[in-house]
Amino acid sequence: MEPFFNSKHIADILFRWKIHLAVIVVLAVILSVILSSPLVITPLYKSFATVYPSNIAPYSDENETEQMIEMLNSGDIRDSVIYKFDLAAHWKIDSGYTYFLSTLHWIYSQRVKIKKTPNEAVNIEVWDPDPRMAYDMVNAIMDYYNSKVRKLHKEKFYEVVVNYETVVNEKKMKIDSLKERAQELGTKFGLMDYPSQSREVMRALLGNGGQGGRYSEALKYKKNIEEKGPEMLLLQEMIRYESEEFAIFKLDYDRALLDYNRYYTHLNLLTKPYVTDKKAYPIRWLIVTGSVLAVLFLTLIVIGVIERSRFSKQFSAEA
Image 1 (tube, rainbow, N blue to C red):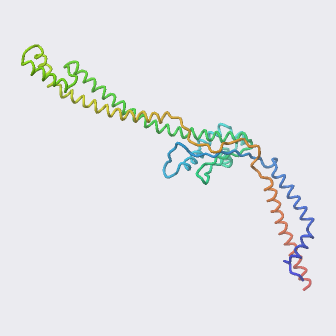
Image 2 (cartoon, one colour; image 1 turned 90 degrees about the horizontal axis):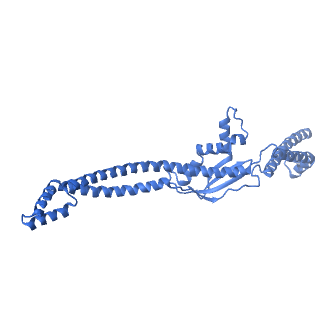
Image 3 (cartoon, helix red, strand yellow; image 1 turned 90 degrees about the vertical axis):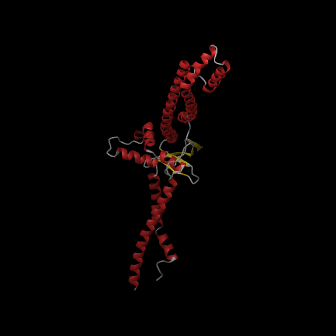
């Protein structure tokens, strides 16, 4: 008797089962076409955008791209998108269902994909039964990302602004207080410029030889300079020093205020999203081909078992 695993014998077996195989393949094709149709599987359309991070500084050990992915996947962006488009109703999730929120978040995670490209860009993909909705969601995610980063920056810049504003106001109050005291000395004692007035007083005293009204006036200023001159000199030095400090802090304050009020975008858009006219899921030819091959493989195994059993019985009878 010829061996079971013989090409001629296998060909004979396949020829003998050809009708069964043909019927099974046809049924598998029909069934897979039906199961992959919109009646069973909801078709999904994909919209996507490719972006690079911009105008951000990384936290911890992560780079800008990783930070961008973390923010895009954040819960508040997800919840904002869900609320804006009322995705629970759009995806027909019953709000009375026990696991309503978990189901909603799970479907979102399956239909919104944020991933890094090999070149450190970020792909934002949205899959939805409505192609226009997928497109709008991609744009909304980018808008919410910009708003989130801008809000985080404003919070930090506001802290800097408040700190510098406090220092600037204190410096200004101190300078005003020093100027007020200097003005008081000038009004009451006629002190304005300590070095210049000292020279003029000495010139008047030495020039008049102790006579005349100007001499007596010079003596008066001499007394004022001796009593209040050092204080006036100290005030002038302090005003100069505090004014220089004020100018430095005021410049830093203006820069911080500029950072706080700036309106930057925080991504560079490389590939713009668009409304597609072709569904991305399911790919019917893959489903049909895979189903037919799987069914055909299982059928061949069953046929092989049947023929093997028949071959064994025939071999036993001949023996």
